[in-house]
Every structure is written in C-alpha cells, then in structure tokens.
Length: 371
Image (cartoon, rainbow, N blue to C red; front, side, top):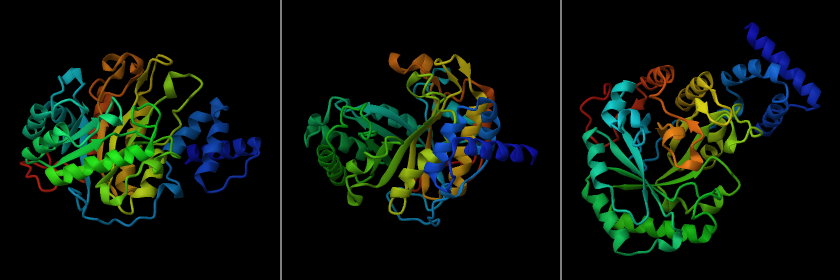
C-alpha cells in the first residue's frame, strides 16, 4: 500500500510539473508517461504501479461471446508458439511442450510466396498434437500473387492435410517494411483472390488478417471486409528501445495498450489472434538484461487477455533469440523463453491456467493438460 501511495504522489507531482490536466483517456496517459520518462528517479516506482494497474480503457466493453468463426473455440485461448529458430531445443515442439509444462495447441512458421507448401513441417506439427499457422508472405510484391497453378496447388496440399490451418497471408501490411504495404487497393484485391481460392480448394483453411500494432492510422485502409476474413490478428512486441535507438525508449509500453486498437476495432465481429508476441530480456542497444521487465510484461499480457479480453482466442509466443539467430539487421533482442530459467518458469506458471487450450476445436487431443 505504501508503494502505491508513493507512486500516486510521484504521478500527481509529475502531472503538476508538466502542467497537464489528466483525463481518463489513453492520450492523456501517454502524454503523462512521456513526461515521466524525464524523471528517472520516480520512473521505477511509477512503472511498477503502472504494470500492476488496470485502467478503465483496458476493459473493452465486449461480453464473453462466441461468433462461430472457423475453428474458433467457444471459450478459452489457443496456446501457440514459434519455435523453429530456437536452436537450444533444435526447434523441437515436443521438447518445448516439456519445458513449458503444457502441450501447445498450435505452432507457426514463415513461408515465402513461391516456396512449396511446408508439408513435412505440417506433419511434425500434427505429430506434436497441434495444428499449423502458416505466415505466408509475398516478399517479392503483390504482382506475384495470381490465380495460378502455384496458388491452387498450395491450397490443395493444405486441404490434403486434413487439419485445421490458420493462414496468415501478407501480415504487417500496415507498416512500410513489407513489400506489399504501399497499395491498399491492390492488397485487398489480392487478399480476396487468395481467400476465394482457399474457400474453393481448402475449406479447412481459416484466413487470418494480421497487422502490426503500429502504425494504427493505416490499419483500416487494408481491411478486406468481414466476408473475406475469418480471424483478425495482431503482432505485439515489448522492447526496451525501438529500432535499436537509445533515444526511443519503450520499456514503459503496456502490452494491453498495444492490443487495444485492434481489439476495439474488430472484436465485435471477429475472434482476435495475437499472432506473435515477444518480450525482450536482453538487448544489444544498451547491452543490458531486462529479465524483470520481461516477466512483468509476460504476466501483464497473459493474465490480461484472460481477464479483460474475452474475444482474444489465440496467442503465439515468439521464442527466438534474435541476437544470435535473426538476419543481421534484426540481431537486437533476445525474446527466447528457453534461454533463461526465470523467464521460462514465469511462462510455465502462466500457461498452466486451463483457459489456455492445448488443442484446437475439432482436433482430438490425447492429453489436454500435460505435454
């Protein structure tokens, strides 16, 4: 209680200094946070309070309801992960389940447009009792995407698996870092083409339209329409600094705030998938470890979606040490769970909650509770 009172006093003092009148709205809080960043002595106390406080705008006004989307669970959250690049376990899904103490319902991997359907990997996913999410990326641009033998062959191979498949086609188009981000009209045209072919050739495929958490203002321009989307996804990361820049501090960012825009905009009609979530516990930007921050953010995200976000129906953890295994320009943050026993233990405790589901609806699981 004393820490809370101190935090409140520091918070209000910073507001007075900044000359800000605080209103119960996200923009007001963001402005105060930016002011508080200048007060480093007070920031630690305030951050601790902030991470353990839920504000009114963190409670979107959606009831706990089910819309019957393809492969949507009536309740609970599919537990997923990306482990392909976790060299400490050789990308082994069964070993990841063992270490985390929980069978995961789904795993994902990236496939570039023009690459073959990842049939061998899908068989490995099925052997682990899970279903695949495929992040299918037209990295050579949208002109490559046509109704041709490649697209239809990919769809037919997807159908032949007999598994539910989450197809995350052309994600993060709202940013300027993808090869398919510049033309919303063309993006929508190509998305609808892929959707229609999958609907015809592979009815087991659920189309997951996925954005990055920012920039927000471009997100609606790329939405293909409710009839062309099964799930809406968002990729969320908590880092100490943005873009490897010391002047772009980001440790204060709340993962639930990073989720809010997509949730409020689309959750009334679509189940929400956190298609990637990662939190750094080491960054080369300042050469420091951030284990306590990582554990705090993990708790905030995984507990928060169960408590306040009933329309979030799947979450995938990005289990990669990018410092060691990413392409050169992304060797900045270590997001891996398995490289630090404290973070692994925190994740293990969080996902033990039975509301994190170990199998996808319609898929028989031998054991829901154990890896």
